[in-house]
Amino acid sequence: MAKVGKRYKEDLKKYDPHNLYDASEALAKVCEMGTAKFDETVEVHIRLGVDSRHADQQVRGAVVLPHGTGKTKRVLVFAKGDKAKEAEDAGADFVGAEDMVQKIQSENWFDYDVIVATPDMMGVIGRLGKVLGPKGLMPNPKSGTVTMDVAKAIEEIKAGKVEYRLDKANIAHVIIGKVSFGQEKLFANFKTLMDAIVKAKPSAAKGQYLKSVTTASTMGPGVKVNPVRIND
Image (cartoon, rainbow, N blue to C red; front, top):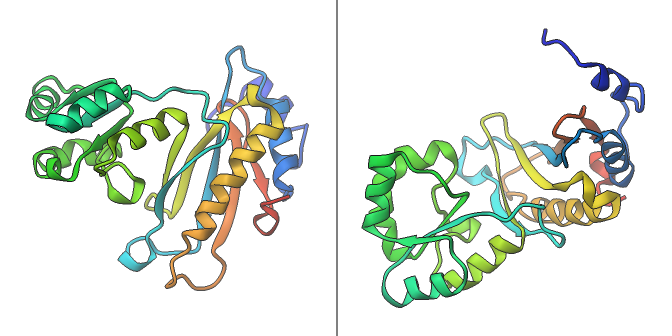
């Protein structure tokens, strides 16, 4: 078992790790325990009652958080002609086409956080599937990153758009801000995210949809949220 630090042990005394807290109270606990020397990131981990191995039970999408994430994402856009110019004017950090594919392949280049592409570029990007896929960087229409409206996509990403999708254990791991945001802003971001995930419930999903919800800061322990009181 990994060693637990002194501060972590002290944090464990500040709450009941087995209790299910209302969302606002859970986030207040996370803020209270987020006392590292840097501004800790706050994440939410949501386990859903679906089987993402089946196409009709996959849950994936994106939502713009009202208070952003506390981090400005670097955006790479695959586009040509007028759309490339549109992307540059909208504030994309990198814009290109085949030249970017070559740069990624030859230099193993990943100095960006999100990739946006126009639909006509997906054939070109497809060559990078084995490279981008495992890193979660492949553009996808469900997350709004395959679009002709590249300006809107860039604007939303820069404003704090986050993507949610399930891992092999049917858990979504999503950043909702920084400890410095405070409980109220974090709760607003949390509620926006959870509303989107609840709305995205597949019709094929049976039984309890929200199995568990846990929130934590970078260095802090996880605090469990009551899944039936996520708006409290």
